[in-house]
Image 1 (cartoon, rainbow, N blue to C red):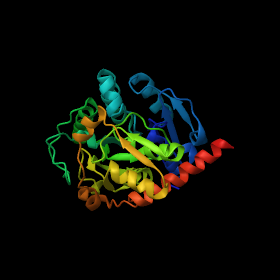
Image 2: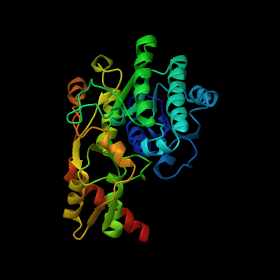
Image 3: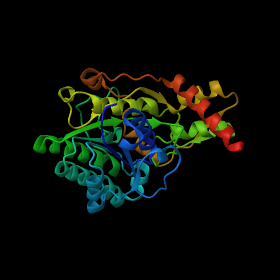
Image 4: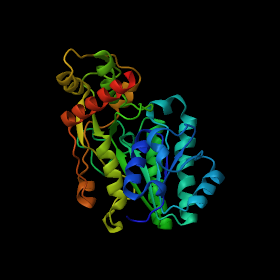
Length: 321
């Protein structure tokens, strides 16, 4: 087993909670420190060290890094799109100050590699919406997207000026059965499965023809680890790599669910999140990631739907015991 010491901030979030588990399987439970903001530790995260730190508190964050002396940090803390629109000041402070604190401390304390997630929210209404290329116009309409563009450029700056090996992915919508939606515009693609199991109906907050790029969580976690383990000479993009697995409409997703749950009905009642969804790409060209470090997805919509429903059904049954 490779000897590593890793810190994962945002460890109780959607991606962080599952990434921590996979990293601990790979590198050892005591080698991966999960860091949360305020949520109590629970479930599988209790298998290894856990700390509560506010990433906007630079002295506390620096103390944490000095305590554990990690060679790698996965910085996953962030206020997401829909929640960010309700409190833009908080989104800027958490997303930007937190990132800069991580980069400064990593540079000063000898951290070897940093991962930071960008998003399709970095794109905007004048970005090509179909097969969006790696290098294109970035003109986001949300504060979340603004922080992602600024963050990408900041990460690239720290690589060019200080040689800090920062790597990043522009995640599409991420779908998982393990954690509740966290305030993102693509949350409907998670909620639909839970509502299908519980009530056999779902009122979707985007229109039936809304198409967005998506990815199942096992692929997202694997892509993240593969990017971080790729040889440094293979990493040609120092802003953020486009990443995707599939694109589908809200109606196509509902149809996929209905094939597994007869009688399921989905209605459509777009709210203010429709405007955000309409500013994002319908499909992504991630050929650069596939060429540079061998990215390849495993789950399509049908495989994902079956796996999601199987796991949620098991969770629901265990709750009734």
